[in-house]
Amino acid sequence: QVQPVESGGGLVQAGGSLRLSCVVSGRPFSTNVMGWYRQAPGKQRELVAIMTRAGSTNYADSVKGRFTISRDNGKNSVYLQMEGLKPEDTAVYYCNYQPMGAVMTYWGQGTRVTVSS
Image 1 (cartoon, rainbow, N blue to C red):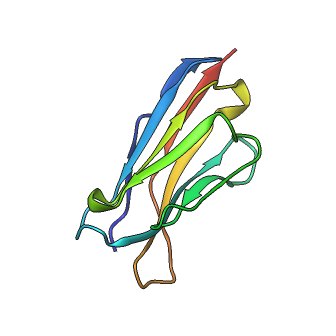
Image 2: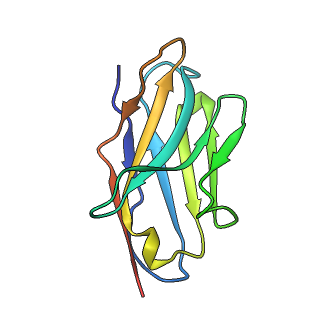
Image 3: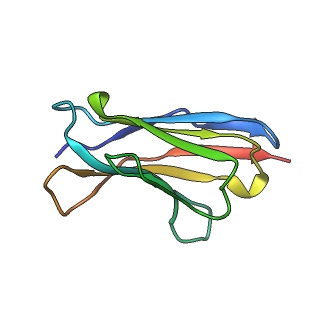
């Protein structure tokens, strides 16, 4: 299977915004659940937001109301719009997806988000 490719990370001041993108190359409409996780220094990787193919979503409590996940099934892409960023959002953000009909999921290499106070 194909590793997803993330983009859009960077350095931003507290209160700012960033948009992360993740794309999985291959046949259109071939992804099931897609989502974002993050890992801050010294901490375990945690769920940020996931979205099913049908559009159901699940967010971490810490990002509800600030982050919005969306996807384009035809492009096998998932996005994360992050608003009102806080220093505690600083982490490497990883895209994860599950191919249609598969049990395993696949991780991207990650994109770093740094929020300065």
